[in-house]
Length: 209
Image (spheres, rainbow, N blue to C red):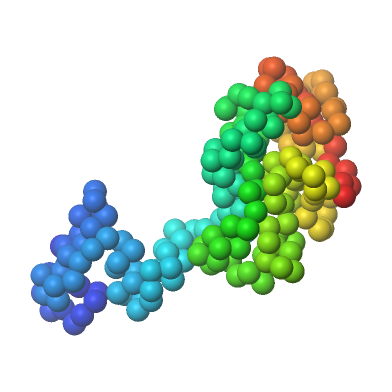
């Protein structure tokens, strides 16, 4: 119980239920959940309140938010999971460890702005094309340190990376401590070997077009 931040309160009338994420003010009679509080306190609408709360809790970088979105989509897309199985990648632990996702297309531009990322920023990075469609549409996506790798499961060009820095070895800081290393061609080869119990595997992140 404390002073209400929504009106000129002189005696504690603002009740918060932390376990339920609810509030109610006995003085002004307003109440609701944490999103409703952000709407009232900042004078914004629902979607803007979500953005405020996301920023307040410490939103990740743009690519981190994109990767999480694609990870969620993978679990909703039967064709994408079937493609992974065909490539020999089926262990949920490995899929989670590599943060493998799927870009269904035409929805990234609607979701990311709700988290505070402008469509202009998405286009500048290369995540959206000029038409506003997802550049990684219909691709299995592997997050890299400062990039994304997409492998088409359809008829589009097989490989895609965002413009910018490419190269290096995947997860180098993690695997460099092993006395012996196994270098493979691509991320699917790496995933299969990690799945088989070989954590000392890396692959080259060369130029893919």
